[in-house]
Length: 262
Image (spheres, rainbow, N blue to C red):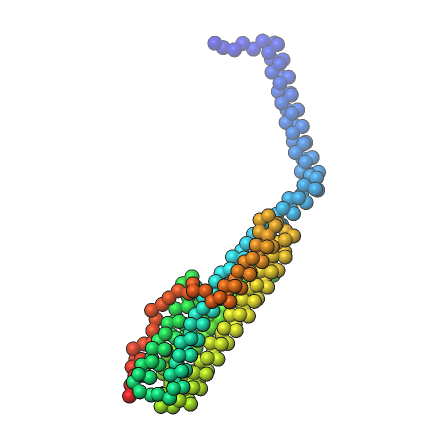
């Protein structure tokens, strides 16, 4: 059925169109007024909220990096303790003055264990005693995390075959061998000091992070959380955790053969 347009309905339609145009004009004026005269308090709240969110997100990233660094240092500390123990065993064999087959075999075993302790020191699949970088970077600064060197990685082989300023062990020359072992011991001790120092620096960073977060967003990540993470990490370093990944790395057959040679 067709709709008939009467004079009355035509007038109503025109009136409705006029009202629609007027409403659209008022809405445009309202939007323009709001854009030009937005309450400054609302902008301030939005900016503060954005800044807080940014700080909390950065804090989370920093905390994650710091915990990762602590994990790497924990593995390094444990492995260095093991390496020091095996090196001490070799030192005791050299100090005994014996040079027969049993002594040579004991030294070879000690160096194999030393090599395994050093090369098996890995965190997240990466070596932690060859200087691999686990540093923590923030928008304002960075904390170095990375210990060891290639000399430390190759320590057992250097003691067996000599090189890079370290003489090869020779049970017929106990004085020279003792000096080489002292160099090795100093290298391990120096690296352990690096671990302690870097762990302390990370603790300091986490302490600063906790103080900052106390005034930013305690409900999201409080200062006590960061302080607790620092304390737990420090305890882990001190306790030399057993989380170090094991490895089957050993001194090469030629190295062992050299030590066992007459």
